[in-house]
Image (cartoon, rainbow, N blue to C red; front, side, top):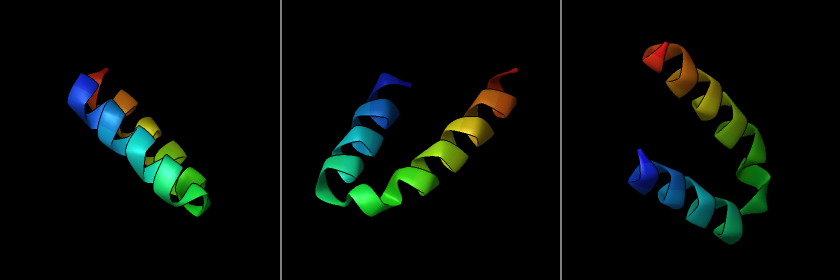
Length: 34
């Protein structure tokens, strides 16, 4: 979980245009955990 978070955070740092992708993945992961 934490590893994925850091990977996504790193991606955002490298390419801030992926903010939308981050939000989509975050929502998807949240639904999967629920």
